[in-house]
Length: 120
Length: 107
Image (tube, rainbow over all chains, first blue to last red; front, side):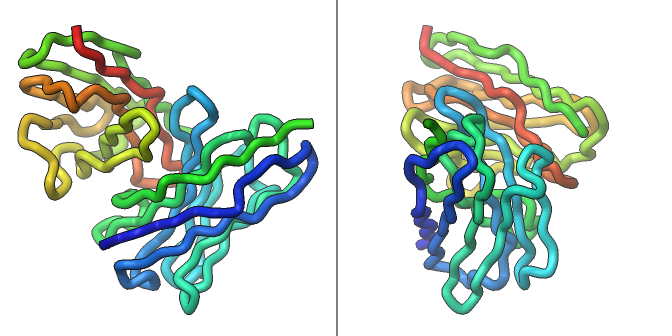
């Protein structure tokens, strides 16, 4: 069974940093792109970033470029999101989503999410 | 960047009746279009990919069509468990933008 478990969320002040983790199980991790998607309270979904199977390629949505960094550890079957210079508008539930085998940019399984709150 | 626009923002449909949701992209996304269902307090669930292919396990009352810039998701006979917000997403190139969502409720 595919499982994705996010962790690392919490309350942080504006300008602060957090590192999110997503632990994967139930599939061959290094065969899949991985994505982060966020959802602000009461709002819609926003794709944040993704990373290729071997970590050699990644992409970001414009509002987080230069502040967030996605990485992965295939030995640990985990993907990470380092978030620096956090802003109030980064407050959201952050979901980890697996890229499908047919198209790595299509999220076919999602974790339950971890809440990041940015507030003074 | 390509903008994905969903309509309507919400709709109320009687049990057993048809629900239709539209998604329009500002430029062609070919058939790199997915539909997700999100129930309250849950993560999104992939329903449709490739504009019209049902994900494994998705009931056949869910169907979708379209290509290029105009797409449609149809629930042929609404069930109580279909109450949710539905999102379209283009995935042919980053940013992998979502539509704003359509909330489906029971009338």
